[in-house]
Amino acid sequence: MNDSRGVKTPCNGNLSDMIEEEAPEFDKHSFQQAIGFLNYLAQHTCPNILFTINQLARCITNPTIIQWRAVKHLLRYIKNTSMLGIMYTKCEETESILQGWADADYANSKKDQK
Image 1: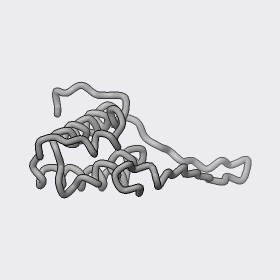
Image 2: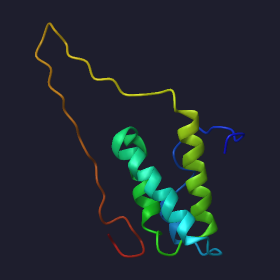
Image 3: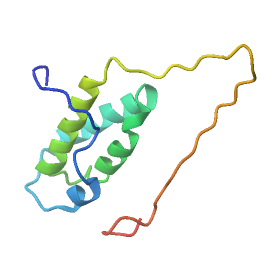
């Protein structure tokens, strides 16, 4: 991965279709290890990759080559954005309020409607 070129997006294409696509199986241990590493990274430093990891983790028991390519794509994204970060600073003049929103679509999965 050291010589690979970086990419600008955390996932390439529609992950839902990619997850449900039939393909040869991939080494389960390597896939689980990569997902564990990525999940740790996302929880502590890189929350923008959580959605992609969540989708890939759905395949953790039966990973395929296609899902492994998606993991490698995500690793190239992390390599390309390693110099970026989020910094929260206190504004001295006014009262600061941190707000967040979420837009979830829990019935979008064609496979099991979850």
